[in-house]
Image (cartoon, rainbow, N blue to C red; front, side, top):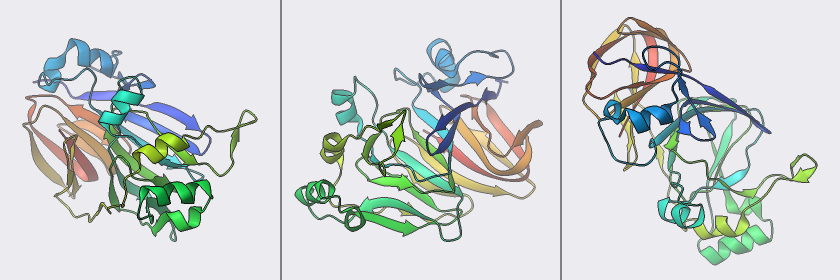
Length: 286
């Protein structure tokens, strides 16, 4: 039987908090296998040299990036490009479609997703005139909420919020507004023109209700399902590969211990596996 791929996470400290990249082959944070026959190898190396682990699917780079975001302060107001725009404007990078599962937040927490403008010219006018409260769509958020963030969607995580994010393997972010924050004595760079280029008008809401055993979202880049396991559950790996993220609790997979905050890859043709314990998981497939 093939081995499960467990990784050493990559910790990235930022002005507003930190990110923990749990499954990543991106050059800004390339996870290393922590045990087994591939111990010490980066995920990007496995993608290049052992594509059979991923069903021999095509692509120059490993397609997904899974991370935990811990926001102590508000993130910048931002937007991401799609594949076409990123390829043309960002040296061939992938675009950034992503989704969020809210792990924790304040009782009166909120996030920013979307905008209230009716036309592209209205978007530009509101940004130029700093009419942020009028432009931005701020909504209440609670633990367990799930959102699909399509390219072109204005968004921002607010302070004291933690999320699990599944996204394309891209690190392209355009900042619209950053509260006048400085880094090393300089205002952080904004990307106004590129942001306006990619913002989609009008905004279409993509919030998704969450229930046990349900597919939360399925798009061309990933399918994400959530399972609440009380004692044990048998799964079958019949995809190119699967990623499991433990969002709550502790347990085991085929006898290997697994803990909250951990993500790992189940390679191609792994077969059946059993998850035991009182745990909540996100199951990610392509």
